[in-house]
View 1 (cartoon, rainbow, N blue to C red):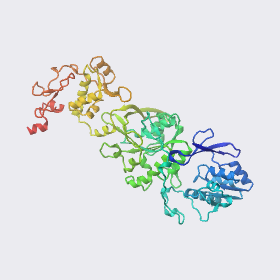
View 2: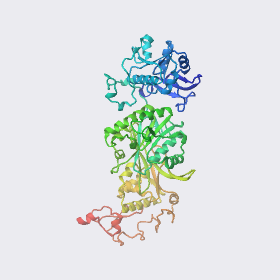
View 3: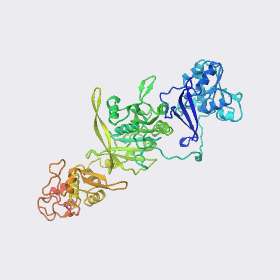
View 4: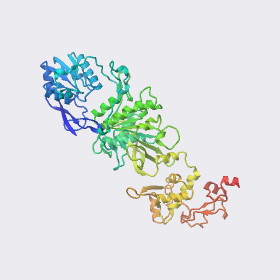
Length: 623
C-alpha cells in the first residue's frame, strides 16, 4: 500500500513530479518507489530534475547555512522534523547529477550522510566528489546506529552524534557483476550471503503482458521471452506486431487500454527502409516506439551491449514509462569477449537483463534463430548455448511449411503458465506504405486463428512427403469429403482415423489440405472439435450434392463424378486390366479403391500400382 508521497517542486514551489512510496513493496520487496507526473500519470520522461525541497535548499544556501544531503526523501523529512535542513535527489543511490551541485553553491557547509551499506557509501562518495568539483566545502558522516539517518534519529541520537567517515570512499560505476576484489576498500569483504525467509516474501500472481484469453497467458511481464524460428518465418514481424499493439494499448493483458512506450533494438534491418514502414503497416503509434542505440565516447553510436548497458536500459525504462524491450536478434547484443556457445558466458551476459526485467516488470522479448540441425524440439534448435532457453521463461516458436505454405506459431515453453495452449496460424501479407520517396512494400503479420498443426508437426515433416504419397493423400481426401452423406465436410478426428486405416499418416493428410482445396476450423467455443471442409464454392457445391465446379481454381474434374459406384468402368485398374488378383479395399460409400499386395496383403501405393506391380518391392524379392 502507498504510505507516502513526496513532491519535487521548482524554485517557485510548482510541482514538477511525485515520488510515491509503497510498503510492503511489489514482488516481495520491502519497499517500492514509483515516479509519476503531477496528474498521477506514470513516468517522468522530459520532466526537469531538481533536488527535493528545492525552495528551502536555495534559501539556506543563499543565507550561507548548513545543508545535509541524504539518500532518500524519508530521511530528508525526518531531519526536517528534527530541525535540520536536508535534501536528496530523485531515484536514490547512484542517481546524483553534477547539475544538482549548483543548487548548493553559497552554503557554508554541506554534510553528506551515507547509508551504512555499500550502495549508500558509494552514493555518498559520488555526491562528495561532485560537490568538491564545484568548490563546495563538504564532509561525509554516517549514522552511529542503524542503516540510515532515520534509524539514527529513532534511536534518540542527534546531529552531533553522526560519525565522521575516516576512510576514503570510492564510488563504483560498474554493475555488481563487473566489480572485482580490487574495487573494494581495504578490508572490505567483496562477497557476502544474504538470507531472506520465505515468510517475508509476499506471493503474487503472474502478470501477463499478452493474455489473449483468461488463463491463457503467453508472454509474461517482467521476464525474458524468446521468439525463435528459422529465417523467413516471421519472428521479426511478430516483434513489430507486438510493439504496435503495445503502443496503441490493444494487446490483451496487463497493458490493455493503456498505450505504452516500447524500446526496440534492431541490428539486421534498416530503420528507414524496413522497420519504420513495417511499424506503419502494423498500425503502431510511432511516437511511442523508440530506436535504442548506445553512444560510446570512443566509438560513437553503437548497438547496446549486454550486460554493460543494463543499468542504462533500466533507467530509460523508468524515465520513459516503457512497457517493453524488444531485441532483434538477442545474440547480437552480447558484449565483446562473450562466447554465445558457452553456458557460463551467456548466463553472465543475460542474468542481469533477466533481473532487470523482473524489477521493472517490462516485457522483454529477444528474437532468436534456429541452428541448422534437424529435429522437432524447437527450444533445442535455438542457436548458441542452452542458457538462452534456460533463462527464458517463455519461448514462442515459428515455422513455415515450404510445400503447403502454412505458417504456425507454437508455445514451446511457458514456465509461468500453461503449455497446452493452441498453436496459432498466421500469414505475412503484403502492405504498401507511402513515403516521401515513393511506395515501400513490406510484410505485415496477421493471425488467422487456432491451428491444428504445431511447429513440431512442421519441423517433423521438413523432409517432405514424396510426390506419390502426396498425390495419394490428395486423392483420398478429395474422395472422402466428396461422399454425398458428408456434404463436403467431416470431423477431423474421424477423417484422420479413416485415413490412417487406409495407410495414410496424419501429417500426409494435413499437408494435402491445400492441394485438395480443404480448410479446417473449430465448430464452436472452447473444447469444440475441428472440422475439415472444402473451401468456398467447392463447399457450397458439395452441400448442394453436386460436383466441384469445372474450371475452378484447384478443382479436380473427373468423369464420372468422384463419388461414382465402385463398379465404374471408366476408372481402370492400376495395371490397365481387370485382373481380379488386384483385390480392392475400403469399399465404402467413399468410392475410393486401393489394391493390395499379393504377398503381404497390405495396400500398395499408387506409384507401384499404376505401374502394374502386384507386390511391394521387398515382398516380391522375398517371394
